[in-house]
Length: 394
Image (cartoon, rainbow, N blue to C red; front, side, top):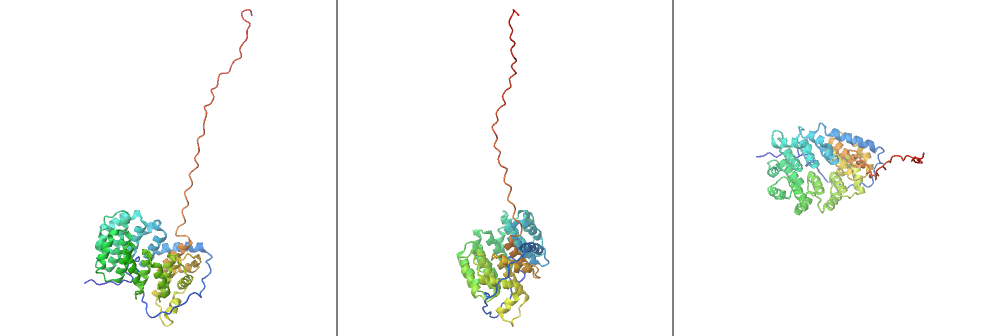
């Protein structure tokens, strides 16, 4: 008999939604009365501090913080942060190694191939089957598909987290041949989070029914499934995504679900002023927002406040309003690693990115057209004056 593992704190960071209990009824709260703060007066300093905070988070003592930082670097820096991913492939924690493997694959960071091959060939080099899924994904993206068929076997692994990781990798590879195995897996799947990940991958691969079924997860009783479904709708480009997200923003009782929906809508190009104000308040005073939603008698857990603050910080980065840097900048000093990473990502998105843009290559020197040359005139010997004589008589 296989003992089921708990999801919280053990799922790879790329798969995990922030999990916390949601209880009680939450009254509707209006946010439009609150005015946003004035613009930050030192955007340049905020950008420098955000770069520093994100780099430091990649070496943080907490493994989940390291994993979030690697995912953030993959979004902001791509292959230019490849050295961080390569180092993280040797992280002692599988969550961080999983994030590193996915980042290498997303960025197609070729210098990591040798390390990935060792991890794929030797179970002692990589004993965790969740990380193995990320390794196979990265190798495939680098052009080596000799190990890819093993993902099909991992879809039926006894561990739910391994099945979810395999489904995620197969969806991101974009291979239509994965549709059959993914549907076969669903016939016996019992874990709701694995079902959601599998439906997301099928939707990415073009399965219209899965795109429609993703909407059902947005109405789940469990908050972690609702949050994960928001990300799934966004990644799959579901045709009704904007409609469903607007409904969540208007009707969902959880501030965290509202903030996550607002951020997803912003990425789709819909930025609502009231939603923006909500996200600013949630980033600055998450406990107050939660108390207003749950009532003053409800005890607010630290994980709830950190979850809301993280989601709000990420949402603000998608709203393309640089004045939000004034609220995000102080969060770079948060004791919560997930909040520091989220604030760093959003500050960098709003202020120009992780690195300075590369200068354009210098223009080639103007072509010099060869000038027509004429041969120098041949010099003739000087003509000597002719001596006139009178002949023999003289």
